[in-house]
Length: 213
Length: 115
Image 1 (tube, each protein chain N blue to C red):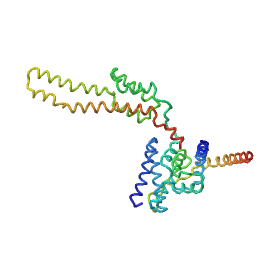
Image 2: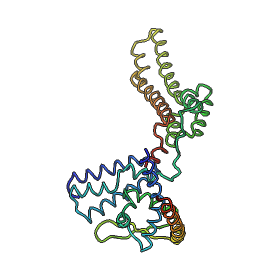
Image 3: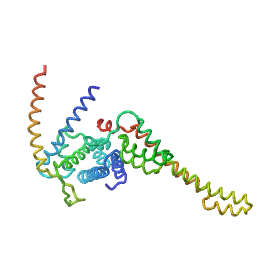
Image 4: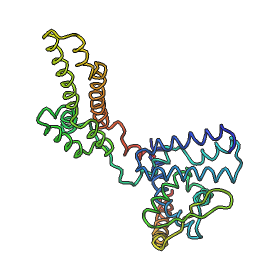
């Protein structure tokens, strides 16, 4: 195991395994990758360690996807039910985005729907809850802030004060910061909403992967 | 299509039986992962993909049919040895009885129906 190409073969195999096993609980995935790596090291310590030996060891292990699928088989892996997102899922995503306009309660209902749907796993649910709380409500709130400050500035201008005063009044929130703030507050919730709908569509049917193994 | 179904059936059958083969290997004494896997692989047709033995080991471990200990190795990192537990021994004994009856039945049926 001295040649970099051999190390790269092993690293590639382990990376594929970790990737294929990303549905497993974190500790289980780490354990599996560790075991397979120990197996490879032991095999190479025993047999030769030229490139042919490395390839042979990896071939005998089987495709990493198959190993990961074997780890998933028989486990209580939450499966995505057949069919696409239903009314519940659409309602959840819409309420998460704009439910806040209904006195905040709408967003809370969205969160409840999000967590009660079987179509999402907990990381997605956490994402939907935390990015961002109150959905686009935060962006709306932010959007109002600089407007007020600058309108105050224009009143000062109309009153005949120097342009310097306007600059000072508005310099607290330069336009680029306002735009950046809006982008940071608008893009993530929309991206998360799109992500949630894609997940709900079940583009990764876990059960099918496990059965195929 | 029928080939795929037959292959799938063999895979299912192997997966179910393989767990007991792992327990059977450990009846001879504790073994570390690589050793265990190669012992199984020495028996043709038992484990086509050696890597899939590890998830099986972990499942048996979680089910309490085997336990593991870390033992220092003279030539490398510590090795994780797997041991059969009392529950594993009992499960293996029960399987031995069931398997013998199952195997006999299948063989008889295949013999009777062979033209």
